[in-house]
Length: 196
Image 1 (cartoon, rainbow, N blue to C red):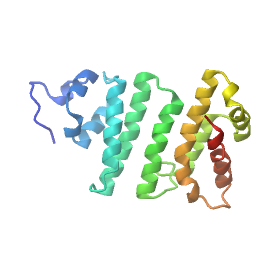
Image 2 (image 1 turned 90 degrees about the vertical axis):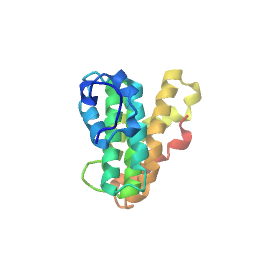
Image 3 (image 1 turned 60 degrees about the vertical axis):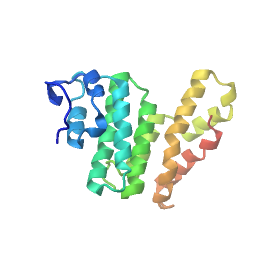
């Protein structure tokens, strides 16, 4: 499906981010947008372009009028856009993972949890966040209690951790109390009120 856009060259002949951004993304089919995301590295290096695509994809993922399969494709496209935005702008990994966590949590809430280490796997998401934080809850608690006395850069790192943990609140109830991950997640989430 190709929209009628003036000009002699086709969409696929114009790989630059500027040309892509000039085209109305919302009129593009998901197939076209998936192809653009797959071709990353071929001129599409504009951070704002990928952020716009992420926003569009998240909106379509949340559109209950669309069939589930299509909404899941939009969710995967949102994750691809986040990855491309990170590559294009050297975005902080914690910030990118925060965006990814919100997409994945929304997919889990909308379509149910899986245990396949993919988009809708809450255990996989939690483990990815814990790995990215790179510290234990006890280590972080020490800094969190005294965050007002820390240098600005350390306060910003604590804020990024809080942003990473916040979406995980929505998946805490998916783990039985007997699951070790439930205890681990609860320990992490108990830090949120103390973080800046």
